[in-house]
Length: 261
Image (cartoon, rainbow, N blue to C red; front, side):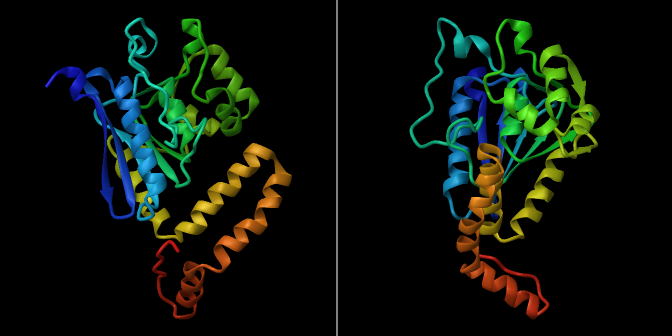
């Protein structure tokens, strides 16, 4: 097996959770075009399979990702292909996954690594994580969503501080500005992300999905769009079997068993 063919993004089913694994540790998990296609396919599976209620994105080895293998995406021999019609965009710039995604990062998490994490919902960082949005050092600019997701997560000043400086910073700074939600000892980040995902899927999946959808309405259209979405949210969840189960389980003083319908 060649070094390039060994590079992959693979996935595993864990009950209602899809664990998506970036697997190219020999190259610090740098992405080649085939890996980006595999990631899009895995996220599309998560989005479309009714039996999958949450995803965990993580990586093998010491590092989350050093970014793109640039020549394979932009060089004379580039093999990158456009996103297939209907597939979920790993950066969430076109089609976005409706299901919640928890991302676990460690070691180097540069450029697209940050953008992939911020395209999800919750980020758990190992305490050895190192972040850098360095595109402007290379004469380009972030193209995977950092230009606005830094702002929504960290606020204007923190966003521009790191986007302008193109500096490297650690997990505690990422936590301070809101790019990550938890910092854990290195080596425990994936299991912590899986624990959070298991907690999420114990809740009603329809309720979780419409909560994410309604939150995105606010990001995309502001407060009035979010208010307008309330009626749709109410209609989709209040008549569901899961809503009836939630009420019955409360009355019977037992854990709810949701079915996603």
